[in-house]
Image 1 (cartoon, rainbow, N blue to C red):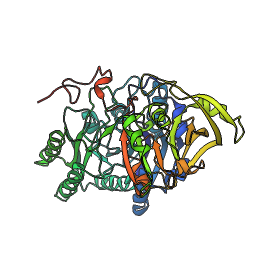
Image 2: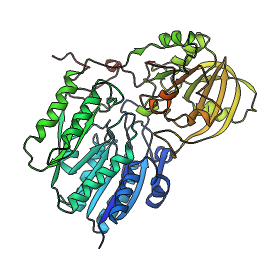
Image 3: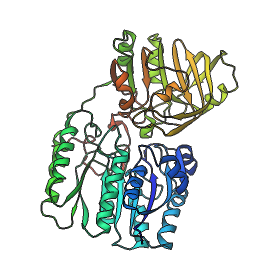
Image 4: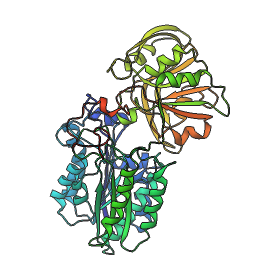
Length: 493
């Protein structure tokens, strides 16, 4: 009989400071697909699932993929949504015999009842399949990896890049390790090293800085006998939970002497570089000052608002940066996305070319990044916000912004959407008639991921902190549950 593998994809990055719960509807807004539909939509793109299937085809395995589900980062996942997403996996685990299980998870899910969402998935699974069946897990390197996750899955492997461009490769190598465990060639176990920090100083950035050398050291260590994978996780700091923070993981042969020492050295290096950020975070006024004098030398000026990044669970409707750009009379510019379902819906009823005055953005939490702006502009695009990506991260994948409009206000084309997504791909502007390649100033809401598609066209990239929900000023947030002392909330030796 062929090797039989059970697979499932359940992914969420939870910002516990976001007061809106994440419901099943939010998963439908990104993707919530039964197995065959998931394979059709995601099985030949830069996804972990594609890597799993690549390996399975080579080894003639039988794969039963039961669900692919992901929602945009947001508040705690409701118990109803969590139970509904786990149900197909747990039902299949209990009704058939499997040689192994592979789970595509994020690593930073928090639910209404469980601060360690992935740990809870694994606990429920183990209650059905028992303690010994090989289980492998792929993770985003912004995972907050708990000891329970390491105890309940023999194999944990994170992507090695940020921006994340190696998803398919990670799925492939994780599945190959699972196959070796199934055949009895290896007896893997994953160990963890952790430091008392909210996140690595640069959020795990791998395009420059110390993470390049750390990843090189990890790849070199993987050449040692008995070492199968080393994962370095920058963590997700917008989670007020006990097990937040950067980790180094090693999946190695059970009982290997010195395995823990390898990752403790990596964790020490993360700690020692805690005061060395690569980015300089400008105020919105400073960013607008630079934009006002930008001459489009070698390409557009890219301004990234890290603090209002929907990809980290911010509300995406902060107006501080847009307001500063308008105050500085910046023209030949675009801005997006501005998440405002009310205005996006209203503009669907307007004619192209119509002049409208609307209260834009800032409706969710005005204290975080600014309240509504009263603007007058011209409707230049409206309709359905479906996008098919073409870049390194979203290439071939679809995302929907929901009802979408573009409003031109004083020389700035503002992309107004209904469903929150960060900007990852040029098509997220180009689909709606905005050409970021030729626009003088491109202001976008994203954190690091935008670089994969926008760095090649940029004349210069600057980043700012608008004071929105994902502000880098962590002391302004009301942390209650993280262990103290912890850096940078506390002064630590």
